[in-house]
Length: 76
Image (tube, rainbow, N blue to C red; front, side):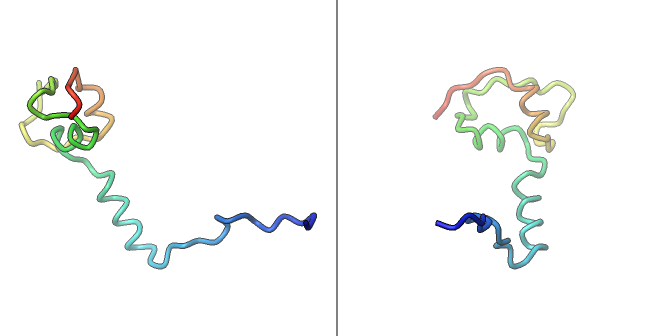
C-alpha cells in the first residue's frame, strides 16, 4: 500500500453539464405548495392539519415555511 493519498473515490467531478445540473437542483428545491411538501414527506394530504392562515390555497411555500406551518398528519 502506498503512503501517498490518492484522492478517494469522489475526487473527480461527475457533472457533465453544470447548467443542467443547477436547474435540476433548483427544480427539486424550489417553492411548492404545502400539499406537494406533505406528499414529499409521505403524508396523506387528507389527514394533514396545516396552518393556512394568510396564504392562498395553492400559494408556493419554501420547505422551511411549510415546516413552520405543519401541525400534524398521518403517514401513508
